[in-house]
Length: 559
RNA sequence: UGGGGCGUCGUCAAGCGGUAAGACACAGGAUUUUGGUUCCUGCAUUCGGAGGUUCGAAUCCUCCCGCCCCAGCCA
Image 1 (cartoon, protein in one colour):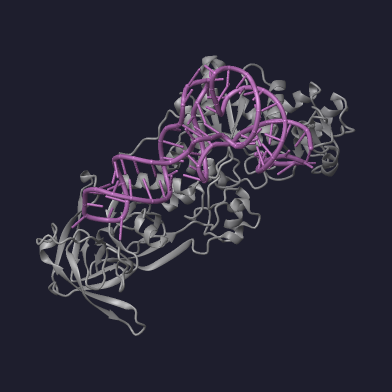
Image 2 (cartoon, chains in turn yellow, blue):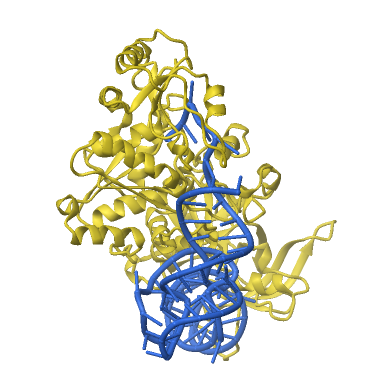
């Protein structure tokens, strides 16, 4: 049975929520939000946040908004908005009619800024970016107050209006919060609230030339949406005092509370937007949805399921420790889900021709094969058998090691769902490579073990040569060859050169004739595969989602 | 260096003063017409270190060590 993701999880954030519930904060209402900036595709790290925010909302009968945090026009676009909507929905979450855009609040945010000026809590600063940096001080030295810090409210109001009207060049002025230039927390040293930027915004066009900064827009967007718990990642911990400062100055009554958790790091991949963009832009991968990418769309195309990803997110937990999660846990979650629901079929990746010498020429049979060994309700299918077959090259060895259970000189092996066959001879080409095997079959073994009681250990998969369908199969491996490429500045040096292998001579059984993109199968003994959208009628293309656990490979490889 | 965080098995992670959950990984074994699945079994005398408080400490106190974040008019 597929295990539903346990709705009632526990972690320090839920502890805080429950404590608040006991104290009846926000009248028992719980509201979260997932706030991506639409300047890239979301990845597995975002999925952790999505599962957290939507999961909490579901668990406490609250709501979770989807919000585009689009306050910096640079790099943001509708393409990204659409991809985010698609991906969050695919992950299985629903925000009803609560899709918001920070940019929808630009007017209200502007009014809040005016209010801050009127109460003497913000001022227009005319220092250049360089001057601001210099006067900010350092970790050990206090900053210096801006010479414009004590402009009158009237002057500030006048200047701010004119900033909005486009009277000044980019960078000529900023609106700054008047807090404390000597604060040990650099975030509190009169942070910039608004900057002038003549950059068309993908939603508001050229209506605005001033844009609010994250610190100003985010907390107020939370407040405007009635968010109770604003969950973000650890690097914003230093910003929390500013979050609270702004909200306290401008919002009456219930205020949102920011809580930070550790972002996800996954082994053998990179998760930073900058690096992901580089992989795509420099064509190290085929695009955002390349099956090797840790993006949600990449995993979708790879054949990972939403259930598996949600389960993974539940499994890793939520805490404040820096972490590097082993991909094998993700792969485990994918196998666990796919094992449950995938129909079994046979595919020969690297074919080796086998002729059954004592099987009559021209004869063929149909064998009924179970679609799932543990789930008879999933039915069965007919698989054709004939005199000439293909088996996996790996399943024959001229000089096999002792524990090898497959075919070799003098050996017998079971053809999955069919007969026991016995090796007779091999044919080699001029290079000495084995190109064909001759075997004989035992006609009494189709439905059971040999009558004389002899043991046949190995079972191998096969496909009937005259019936099999040629298919393209793409095998994927980890994108990087080191555990933590994200920790390396020259991360591209560690790309795994063998992360993609394309097989053009594979054969799948005849029942796979009319497969549809996205459908998943287990190719017995090999792994889980899904049909790639590149597939065309009569020319299926399969992606290997994840290989089966292979204790033989581990054993053989270990020696 | 100032400030903010974090240190429990190889990797995650419970634990909230009463004597170290669970998952993945790993290692054995059983069943098996997938070397798959499933099922058993094993896997931290110890919680970054050193002191202290206590009948009792991963949990409280002190000091030390290590790692992460902050000096964008990015988020």
